[in-house]
Every structure is written in C-alpha cells, then in structure tokens.
Length: 519
Image (cartoon, rainbow, N blue to C red; front, top):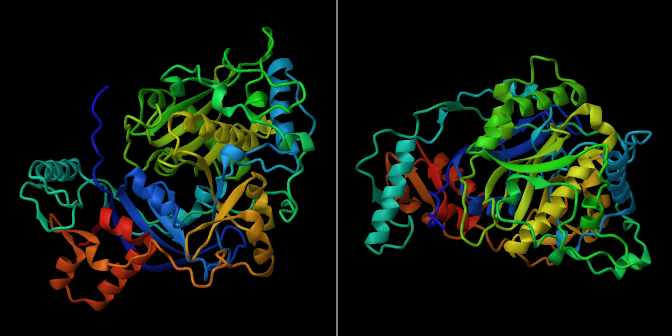
C-alpha cells in the first residue's frame, strides 16, 4: 500500500458581516441571514468540525445561518444509523422497490405522505435565480497548483527540522510565484430551496414500532463482511452476500434484509449502486458526466420547474461536482477514502438517480439528490436516504468512528420540512453550545419558539469556541503567520472585528488549522 500523505491545510476567505436574502421556506424577501466563506481547499477533518458547529457547504461556498436572527432557523440534524430501525412507512418504500425490481409492479400513487426529494434537498438546491442576484465580483480565485506545492514544501521542510508546531510560527515562502488570485474566479452564493409539497409528520409522537422490533438484534456487523476491497466503485444493490445469516423466523427483517433481499432469476429489473469520486473527478465519474448532467437537467425542469436554459452544465458542475474537500485515503479509513462522491443508481444500465454525498471522518453527509421524474413512483428520496444510512453502517465496519448520517438542516418552523425527523434516532445540534441533543427533547421547545437553545444547562458554554484568537492562522502576501503577527502590522479596527467574528464561528481548533486568506 502506498504511503499516505497528510493533506495541505484548508484555505478559506471569509466574507465580513452577514448577508440577507430571500428565504426559500417562508418566502420572506430579506429574512434569511447567514455568514459565509469561500473554501479554496478544505480538509475533511476541518469540514467535519465545521458541520459540527452548524456550517454547511454549497459547492465551495460554506455558510452558517445566523440562528437567532434568520427567519427560519436551520438546525443541523444527524441520524444514528447503528441504532436505526426503519419505520412502517419506510419499509413500504423498500418493499415497493423490491416488487418493482422482481415483478415490474408499479404501485398506485406516488408515495404520498413521504417526501419525494432527498433529505438534503434544501441544503443546495432551490431558486437558482438567486445565483444571478448574488453574482458578486469579490476577487476570489481558486488555489493555484503552485501555491499548493509551496505549502506542501514548507510542511516537509518543517518536518525535517523537527518543527512540529504546525503553522503557529511565522513562515515566509521564498518560492511562491503566484499569489492567491490566479485561476478561475468564483462567486459568493447562498442557495436554498423552497419547501416541498406534502404535509409534515407529527414529530411529537414516536414512530410506529412493533413490539418485536424492539427485541430485534440487527445483523449489521455480519451482513457485508464478504464484500471484496474496491466494492465501493461498483456496489450491487440487490442480493445479499452469501455469508450473511438469514433472519430468524420470529424477528422482523432489518434494513439490510429489506434492501438486499434476493431477487428471482427472472427478475424484471436490475438495480446497481455505484459510488464514484466526483472531486477530483474519477474516470468513472468523467465517463458518466453527460448522462448524469442530463438527468439533473430533467429533474430541475420537472420538479423545480426550471426553464430549459437554467440548469446549465456550469451550474451543475459548480454546485454538485465542485468541492473544496481534499481527497484522503488513510490506511485505516474506508476503502473508497474520504471526500466528495456521487452515489449513482443504475437501473437496467441507465442512471435513474444520483445522491451527492461527502464521506467524512465521523459521518456520511448527504448533500443533494436528483432523479428521473419518470420514476417518482418509487419514492427515490426516501429510498436513497435509507440506502445512505445502510451505506454508513457498511463504512462503519472498517472505520469504527464513522458512525453518523448527517441530513443537513432541520427546519421545524416550516412544517413541510419536518420529514427529516422521521429517521430515528436522530439528534439536533444546539446552536449555542454545539452539543447534540435527541430530537425528542428538542421538539417541545421548538413548538413554543422557532429559535431554541437545546442545552438545558444554563451554565454550559461553547467549549470549542475561540479562546485564543491570536493563534488564528493568516495567509497574507505569500506568508503564513499567526494573527498576533499579522495584526501588529494592521491596525484596522473593522478588520479586527471581522477576523474575531470568523474565529468565533469556526472555533478555536479550526482557526488554528485553517488558513484565513487576507489581501
């Protein structure tokens, strides 16, 4: 196995102040408020820490709602797959897929009562006219290859001289030929979707469960042990591994039992799921790019009513293919490595759905789903979410710390967006102390107020908050330096307020690891 090299540090450019824009949920023209930054590059470790502080990415733009001021507070939600049991309605979706694959049966209706879009739909999609409104020429550029190589060279030099203090001391680069400012321009955009049709579930009541389900011992740890290395690039959706034990007669079927139930030899359809790296683009991703884009275009036109000229290749690439996450393949990580991927659903040789996901050190983070509108009757939004939960459990087999499924934002103030709470057990992130609280404990408070502090300890504080801002790392004029050095030469009070705001939002750990670009 080739040796694993640590990734280059994250480089971000923070936008001072807060931005107001149209809310895709309540339609308030200027009620949605967030902070944002452009990520030229980002390690999966840093992004994991950021989403655990309420951040979310849309392409390379990373944003954090101003929770106590925005019109529709968006709470980060995560599911605990290791304890997940599908509800009655979720089982119906899986059985509906099995009937379609085995016999070609098409259920009447199209999954009413279940959301048809991915659990991540609101995180990235929505009113793309917002893109043009926010087409700000903010002098942001992609990180040049020369700059990346320079930073890596500096890291190697430090390692050789046993200086293992990271970037906590002033570093002056003598060989950078291009400043951060060469390459393609980028734009500051915040995109959110409107609520989907349908009624929200009553989350104050627990999901329906049979008594025998409570006693069930899942066979998650044994289900896919026979999968060979590299199975992530071409992962068969149907047919359990031969070594998987069968469920006992008196026990209900597990999630994996329902997904991988054996099909007859003369099955009407064949479904295959392939996980391909999207950034940097793998050969499999490049080979299927056009087919995937055309599927996205049909989806946007049919589901979001976009005109034909709106879902362009550029838009598709920017929001669903480009990612700041640096690919990593540590020896004890998942076979496919960490980073950004497209999970393609192939039916009879054609792509019918694509789930955009990030695989991070502690979770699978769902970004978006688009699918062929002709197959809406299969409830592909629910089906893909269940598949991603099962995929997280599969990754957990090799990488024990990877044990959560992040579903983006939960918006309780918008009843049509409450469906994410149906994937139990799940937790919401406290917007003040950044600790996880079971959703059942949060719902009573959310019924009384759209903004809530979930941590019931009034003395609790943000333990990961910025406590030593002078240790924040700055990239300025070809040099990397701690903020205490930078500010000794820059006495602008307004800039100091911006830097301190950035530090408070990303937290102490990320502020010391990530490089804040200043010009």
